[in-house]
Length: 365
Image 1 (tube, rainbow, N blue to C red):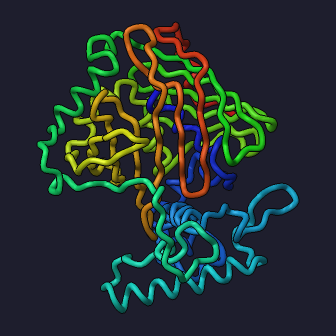
Image 2: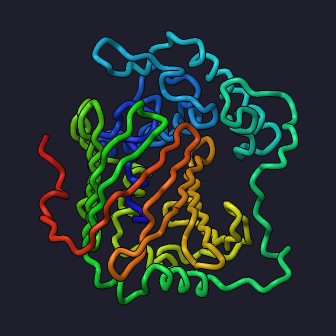
Image 3: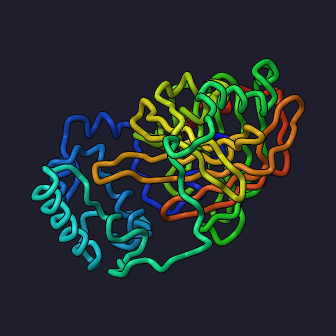
C-alpha cells in the first residue's frame, strides 16, 4: 500500500481546525480572504480558498501547530479573528516584512518566505550550521554523473516489474490493510483499517482514544468524518491528494499521470543508491520519486505542495516490501512533514477481498 496510508492526514498530523464544509468552495468562490474571514489585516487580497494553505505553510515553516498563534473557546472551536496571542500579532509584522523584501528586491516574486529564516524553528538562529559528517548526502545531478543513467521509462518499467508486473497487479481489484500507527501528534498508537477498491475508491479508518476518524473517496467525492467536527467534504489540495491516492492502479501508471517526469539524478538513501525522477503534477505539486537502483522498488516520495506563501514539503519512505500473493507491497511506511512524523506498520494485507461499495459513500451526518 504505497499510497493510501498517506491519507491519514487528519488523524495523524498535528491538530487543526476543521475548515472543510460541504458548501465551502461555493461560499468563497471569487471572494478574498478579507471578504470571508474576520480581522484579516495583511493578506487582504488573497483568494479566500488559499488562506488556510497559507496558514499551513507558516505553521510548517516555524515547526508549530495552529495553537501557537490561535486560541480556542470553551467548546473547542477556533475564533480565528481573535488577537489574544502575541505570536499572531508578530506574524503580521513578519508578513509585511517579507512582502516588502520581495517587492523591493525580487519584483514581487516570493523568493523570500517564512522558511528562509525559520527552517522549522519558531526562533530562527542567525548562525551558520555546524558541519555534520552524518548528514544525509544530497542529490547528485544527472549532469554530474559519468555513468549512463536509465531513462524514465526504464525506471518505471523496472518498478512495475519489481512489484509483480502489470498483469499480476491488473488482477488485483481490492486491498485490505490492518495495522498500527505511532505518530508524533498522538500520545498512543492508533489502530487503522484501510480498504481500497478499483478503480477509485478508498476508506481509511483510524481509531484512537477520542474515537474513530474516517477519510473516504467515492470516485470524485472526498469526505471526512471526525468525532469532534462531524462529517465534512474535503476541499483544495487535500481532496486532490485523496483522489490521487484512491487511484487503485496508480503505481502502474506513474508516467501517464505525470508526463513531465524526468531523471534528475542519483541520491544515496539509507546506504542504497536511488535514481530520482522529478516532475510537476497537474495540481502544480512537484513530486520527486526515489527508486532503489538495484531492486527497482520505490523507496521514497517527496511532494512539494504550493501555497500563496511558499511550498510545503512532505516525505514518505517505503520499507519492508513483502510478497502478498503475486504482488509486492511495503509493510512499513514513514511519513515526515514539517510539523509531524509517523511510523505506519502493517500487520496484515489481503488482496481481492469482497468489498461492499456502499462503505465508500459519504455518511449523511
